[in-house]
Length: 236
Length: 320
Image 1 (spheres, rainbow over the protein chains, first blue to last red):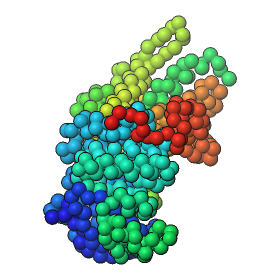
Image 2: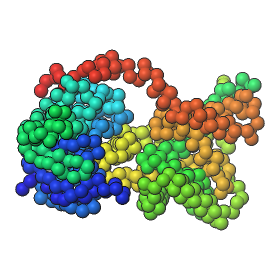
Image 3: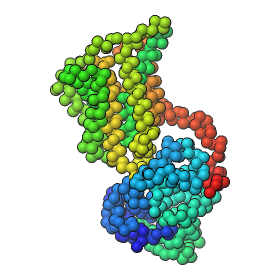
């Protein structure tokens, strides 16, 4: 059984339909990437999984349980963490407060101190900055903090929305290394990226979204050599 | 100009500022969490004043003990108001919540006219006029004014502790700073909104109860205080607690000095407050914190000097 199973979801913003019958699966331990251009529906898809948006029809199952009718604050307790696009930290709270609040839900709260230690081991820079207001850090540091905050909820599935956005090339490479490291520790990853080459090199499988519909899916290395993908996203 | 009065007038202003800050925090908390302006603020201040009077006349409860009843009562009332009325207009255009809360204020005011008539009331106790004399400085400070200031100050310290040290308080701050991020870590923002609204109303009520001991009131009481609260939270930058305390102090000083030191007529005192509001809105729409934020050397220097933006590698170097 897949860890995440999305079946035929339709999602609307008011009257406007943003997703049309989108279906995909994420297996335990995988890194799966959703790629597509701006406005294709990638962010809408993961916001629907995390419960920020509710699908008009279709189902979402996580670990065998229906989660598509649950509000966002309940979904996180099932083991899904979304790292939103643009970091979305609480800018006036300290780094440590941001991280600690990541463990707000469910069992994570009781294990907060051990998890915090592990997050600081993964991101030593965050430990150095723990007392600083999160909004005063650089973009890369803020992205680390956002990922750390997500890890604090002890997720089974980590969904990252454009983690490389606005980072320098060196930091982008480092970001992808961190995602790989997190995955090797047993966390399943769903990655949304406009940096298609990096994403396909990292992931095992990929889905391509175009104007709210899934148009292509397959093993990541195959999509990397797919002429359609190359011309649309890799600039060949 | 009367320079000999500078010290007593300044002390009077500081004592008043404590109460101004107390009443403004409620407004700011509700605005921060829900992004709505609580126009019923004035009604709550007024009703709490009458509640204090009623507790005294009906139950012989000393007014200085009234907050022990008033604060929890209005906390529950505020949560009920949010749950039953305000929640229904969540996500609507700002004008909807403004009109709704304005209507609630008018209903409160008219109820008060029906129940207590329009006569001006005041609460007089043997200790109302008692004061401390400090002869060396030629100072007279009313006990009640001092007590009311201390009560306001203790409340603010408790509130600051609650917001910075408890999980619930941190969840309220997180909801204020980024609502969706709060939802993503498991904060039930609907519940937080209800609690924050309850605390906001309880703070307004506390201010009303304290004001009732030192000022006369009628069903229109609270209107001017609400407008002053607006001035204070705008000066304070809307959500910054330290900013609001500074805003309260600035406004109280401006009012008291203009009358006590510069010799302006007492009836023109409110003119000073509202001129300050207009000036701040035009010159400094984001309040004092924005002014401080524009001087990067104050706030960002330690950070920037450690790590130039963009050049540092956030994870490199440390032990794995």
